[in-house]
Length: 238
Image (cartoon, rainbow, N blue to C red):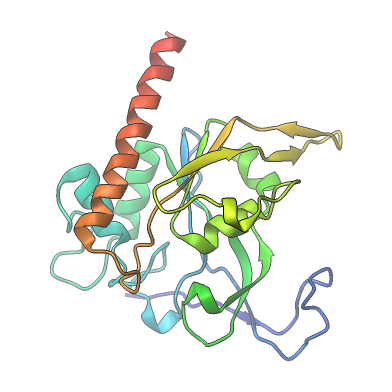
């Protein structure tokens, strides 16, 4: 199995506040967003672990991150549904096909970052360039719910608002809030993309102190709300 490794850049966007420090190693997120045209929700995390921890070249690549076990249990009642036999890896094409079938997008909140301690810890991740939602959201026009997989991703998204939300008012785990993001249209006018909702879910990293069963329960509760909402919209449209 061949795994593509990320590049490390010495140069930083000249508009970044870190531009004066040319000695730092800036990494670009190695995985492109997954943007099914029929997507109605979008998963948004931060940054993958270092390449030596990868088991595949796809979102949440560490075999010991429980994201794809949680997806397997929530949607198919099988934690190993996306696993490749007895191997310690998941099947990225199988996952991608599933996401397109179910209308689930995945886009990191961070395009470029510096690992201050050389690992995947969000606590020690310095964001250099956040996601450009002006580019992403128009590609998934049906998306009305963004769900983050931890506090850092939530913070990055809320800092993109024209009127940033005070940190004390950020949603706690398993809470949601309106997300009034406006994007720059082609005629250089701000315009609403959708009436977006931001939902914060627990991190799927095993470093996050919550049992797998409780994480599954949180993601399952969210998925039920999402499915119910989809059914109501489809009923209204017909």
